[in-house]
Length: 574
Image (cartoon, rainbow, N blue to C red; front, side, top):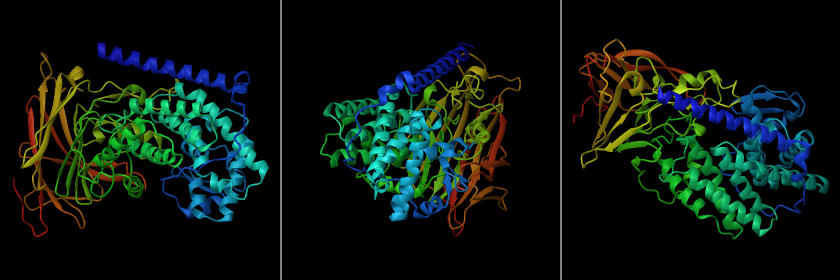
């Protein structure tokens, strides 16, 4: 009960912080405070920073005809300005006001695209530039817009007349001053870090006193040191966040160099740690493992980032601060979650997937986590975040952590993760003939008096993944025998992999052009059940899962294997 009370205290502390932030934001957007955002208008843009995000000239064409495909949602404006529309899809609205879509106009490289970009920026200034309110002025969205306007100022200002040039710079200056006043009180996480990145870009790209650049550089370095872990992961434990932050940090490093300014040591150190961390989460096909908010991967995005990785060595196998393990032998990769949940402030995307793993062979995925539908319906998120949506063990159909699902009352965005494992231990088992680890978590100890321990070992040639799941007595309490020790060990199958039984009644996984893997579980008869793969590029897909059902009091330890067979039918054993 003490742990539940502690979670409740942290939750209501978070709610109180959010109320305070919103009150401060309303105050700073009001007429009494707004005068502070006025000041000298910059005379020019000194430099347009690069943008590493993928661009598609076809999207510029769609936007010209009033079709805005943003955040997986298409809105047709019908001849109106998009900034006049009342759209319910909040992801689309934030993307619209974030202006990252300007990169498509830049990629088009035509006078028509430049004129359209200029017209849309002008529409925004008229509709929202003088009213600091609503989604358009959300600090996180404002940070994205400041970066985008600077990165694509060349296309926006191409052929511009002086009145627009002046209005653009004046609006940009107001947004920068507003963000500077809000940055310190923004919620913890990537948006606050991006705000510091935006302010550093501004100090480099626009005429500014040396003191402004020193302050922006110092604040950025401090935020990076706090949010980027020693192994290169982010405090949210979300692999996607590493990718998104690098897409901002790498152009910023280049902008410091182009302006002959010294970047903060924290920026250089963060990039040097984060590039190997990004490669740590990558399977052989280029996609990122689906943990803690990761959905579908656009491989070209990752390739564009990793071109800047000079190490080009084998990925690390152990990320102790982020809480992950990697096994890699030949073309077989296993990535596992062996960490405690992130701090509650940054847990809106966190999953209850402790000790879950993914298995890929070559460019084909076999065992996966369900992932998230990045742009899909919000009601699917709790399902995707639950322990049962991960390739790990659940007890009594209960997740190893809880989610605050009714936070509309508290005004808190998202659904923070509550409870969950307080202690997760992990020990490597590597030697010359294998890679492996054994890890244990206490996420079920309070409710059911049971600890879950998992051992995974990958043979030297990558042909055999051996697993062992143990369910141990937690402390002095006895494992319960009152029906509250029902275990389900789940292995979610990627929808592109076929699952069938062979002539020996063994479950076999096969993929077109890929390997064949046989699942062996001598102690428990495996069952096949329906599943959902949320992380498909086109949205959720039906899939299947292998499940081992048993009682922990009857079977405290279960062994299983995935054995890879060759195309000619031979089987390689340990």
